[in-house]
Length: 129
Image 1 (cartoon, rainbow, N blue to C red):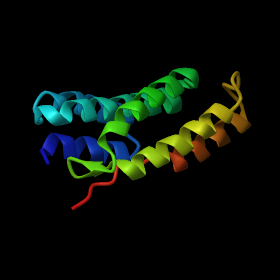
Image 2: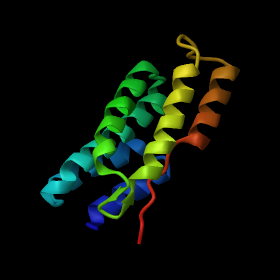
Image 3: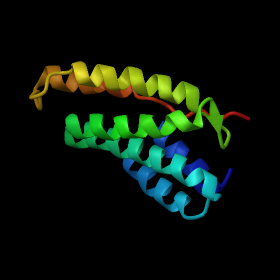
């Protein structure tokens, strides 16, 4: 696995989604052609989580996550050393939780608690050895 991709995954799993998205973009230019679409899906996931946690985006995050899940279907159960099956399951559960959240809640203690809880449940990218 290329070091730029490893670094992107590390940033993603630490919750540094903006940095991860930028690294995924760079990784997409240097990985094998058969992994570019997968990297694009990971980039969309990172962008969605950044939007959710840093900008309060709900519907835009749902849309990006849904697009990424469709792409990931073609890469199950694993690809490029990544556990796509598990990532897809975590994304699905997280997206369902996000869909169930209030549409217009953008401030207050309840909203901050929701984001804190969502951040704890955010999907992780598992690398298979």
